[in-house]
Image 1 (cartoon, rainbow, N blue to C red):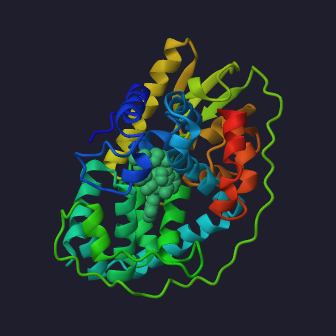
Image 2 (cartoon, protein in one colour):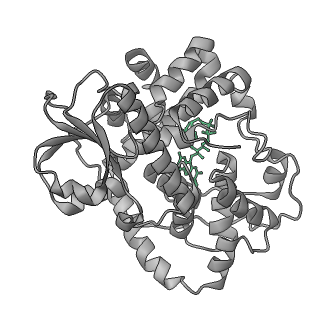
Length: 381
Ligand SMILES: Cc1cc2nc3c(=O)[nH]c(=O)nc-3n(C[C@H](O)[C@H](O)[C@H](O)COP(=O)(O)OP(=O)(O)OC[C@H]3O[C@@H](n4cnc5c(N)ncnc54)[C@H](O)[C@@H]3O)c2cc1C
C-alpha cells in the first residue's frame, strides 16, 4: 500500500476502487486483511483530507458506475467527513480544549512507562504493537483498526485519549482535526455521551481474518467522563463577490484548485501555505510533512501548467502580505488557530458550497444529517 503524493495517483486509486471494491464495500468494509490487501476499501482519505480530490468528485464517479442504492453506504462514509467537520465548526471549543488538555497531559505523562511503551509498540498486546509499527511504516490504518487501537489505548492500557489522538495526528497521512479528535472522543464515550466503544478478542479475530492470537483485553469498562458541554456557535459562511485583483491563499486542505468551486475565478496570484512544525501544536512526523510538501509541489506544477501565477509561502509570512486577500477556509485545526492567533484583518474566507449547505445539518447526530444526503446529492453532485 503506497500513497503517491499526486492528484493523478488519487484519481487512479479512485478508479481502481470503483472497479474492484465499490460493489461489495458495505459487506466487506469492516475487514482489515492487512496493509497489502486493501482492495475492499478506497484508501482515499490521505487525498480527500488534503482536498487533492474532493467528496463531490468521488461520489460523482461512483454514481456514474452504480445506482445510489448500490452506493449508499460508501456515500454515507464519504459524507461522514463533512459531518464531523461541520460538527466541530459549530463547537470549535471542543478542539481548543483538546489542544489545551493535551499540553498539560503530555507533561504529566512524559516519563510514564506505559505511555512510552505504547509509543514504541512494546506493550503486552501483540496486535496493538503490530498496528503501532504499521502506522509508522504506512502512515495509514484501516477504520476498524483505528477503533480497536483507540479502544485498547484508552481502556486496556489506561492512557488518556488525547495522547492517542496526538499520536495518530503525528503519523497519519490523512490526519484531520475533525475526524481524528471526534473519532477518539467517540471511542472514549464522550462524543456520544456514555457510549464507549470496547474492542473485543472475537471481533478483532473475525475482522482481521485470524491474523492475531493472544488478544487479552479489558472488554468491559465504563466510558470516560467529561462533564463539559458545548454550546452551538452561530457561523456565517457567506461568500462575498470575488474580485479578480486579489491574492488567494490555499492551505493544506485545498490542494486541488482545478477541482474547487473557485476554479473559474481569476486571482492575482495563488499562494500555497506551507506549515512545517514550527507553528503546530502537534508535531508531525517527517514523512507526514514530506507528504504534505510533495502534494503542494504537485499542485504548483498543475497550476503552472495552467499559467496561473503561484508560489509556496511559509505560514509565518502571511502577516507580511500588505494587501487584501482571500483564503479558502482552512477549517478548525492548526492553520485556522494560527490565523486567529496573528490577529490580521485584511482577508476574507471563501467557503465551499457543499460545506455552506451541509454544515447547517451538523447540530445533531449523524442520523439526522443522513436525511439531507439526497438533497446534497441533488444539489452538489
Ligand atoms: C479513532 C479514529 C481516528 C480517525 N482519524 C481520522 C483522521 O485523522 N483522518 C481521517 O480522514 N479519518 C479519520 N478517521 C476515520 C476513518 O478511519 C478514515 O477516514 C478511513 O479509515 C479512511 O480510509 P479509507 O479512505 O479507505 O476509507 P473508506 O472506507 O474507503 O471511506 C471512504 C472515505 O469516507 C470517509 N470516511 C470513512 N470513514 C470515515 C469516518 N469514520 N469518519 C470520517 N470520514 C470517514 C473518508 O474520507 C474516506 O476516505 C478516524 C477514525 C477513528 C475511529
